[in-house]
Image (cartoon, rainbow, N blue to C red; front, top):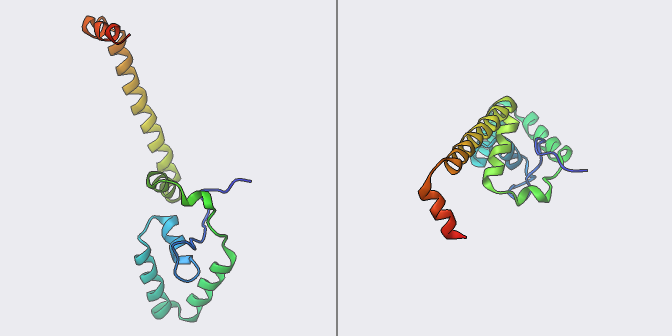
Length: 127
């Protein structure tokens, strides 16, 4: 069974205690320092004991991040963070990318198939 990229995982490799805050940061795309500060402030001022219990429960219940996700490049990580945050925007972005690629490919095809004698000579010179 393959791991899902849209699921929340603990990021123990980049985590300090249990990897909960680094997992949240990886899931949302927010800087991990901001997540740690927010969790600390919420625990101190708003949630008190409930915040600590929630942190420990999440740390025990959530699964670890699969190894294959640590080796992905930064662009892939950003893409999947966008998918998790706003799936409809991600679909629209992918469609826009494909439309742009299709348009550029059509431009190249038009240029190559046109009656451009200089281009034909350059192609013949490469053979």
